[in-house]
Length: 371
Ligand SMILES: *Cc1c(COP(=O)(O)O)cnc(C)c1O
Image (tube, rainbow, N blue to C red; front, side, top):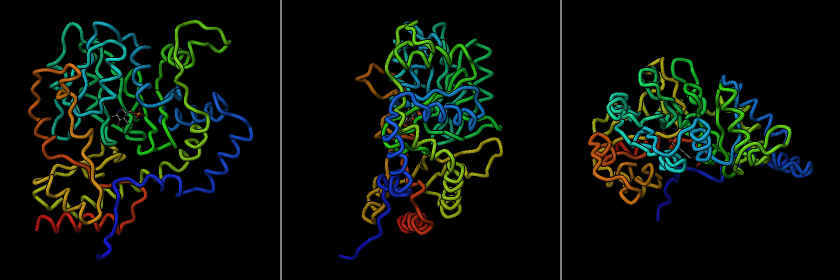
């Protein structure tokens, strides 16, 4: 059999192999210091991350999902409250709302697949307390519109920026445009750790204290237990790795944007597919391309053809929009735009392990399919 080129959707071993020697040194250093929990590496990562995002505070937590519910809880969201989110988001966004006993209200996305501000406003009731926009695929939502709605209706905004570290909207960083914003360092995220890790950003000192005490059993700086809390600390080893990787994160973002440009250049002529925004299309948006999600005619046949040619693809959230999850209590919600989107969406590989040759090969095969 002819050996075909392999372009996996995501290359997990590359994460380690890319700078293996340095990672091993970090592991040795942390191990030899016996520095596992709440040590200087975490403190440093928190301050560097805050600085990077131009936020006052950052808190390292166990994962990006905990980050969301810790922020919701500290903001006082709870039983009887409604929180509006996009139906095109990970279950974690809605799950965090359910975890604090509030009700997630999924709404439509708009033509750039980000939450639709008009749908948000239409979903507001007397119980609505917060908007939880997902900064999806490394792009920010229309934050001016969302902030205007929040202001008008006295709502708070908490951003699920799990996919958008370093993305900007009119110069402001994802995760810093509401009361709090949350980041995930899941291995396949733009800044991936070697396991689970997450962070919360905020400019609010009171919220900051509540969240950082909550993630460590409700313990304050004097070691006194002043509230009920949890154990959701970011492992110090992950923090040490992330510290190291944050230093060259801008280069990684640059590379992601380069790949997106190649896809745009090569594929934008095809009328059978719809691409995300070109990196330089709109100066208001600085996208970091966590994913390259497209809409395609004959999606299943195209994915099969790409698979036969060694190219990995993925449908986000296994193709399940939040409002379609009837087993979780979402019934009789009709979101036609989102439903239509989910019939043809999928993601092609975009990560820093790819060479230009890999990217061009993916483009070539997509063009070949539609020929
Ligand atoms: C990855 C992700 C999360 C959850 O992050 P974890 O670190 O895996 O808990 C939440 N929301 C969105 C949009 C994500 O992509």
